[in-house]
Length: 67
Image (tube, rainbow, N blue to C red; front, top):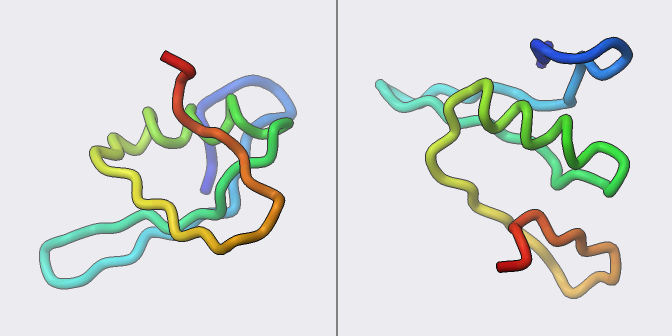
């Protein structure tokens, strides 16, 4: 997915999925270095709901604000 953003930060590996009249956006959780780009994608694409599917691994990244 192309981002409307800064130089060198113009791509996130994500896919639009369509089912009937619904559209979903599938992407991996961000790593700390791509957090700002990931949120840019969320804003740019008008994402209204985020669902995270996680397992018991240790590579968890907090994507929500601390407050």
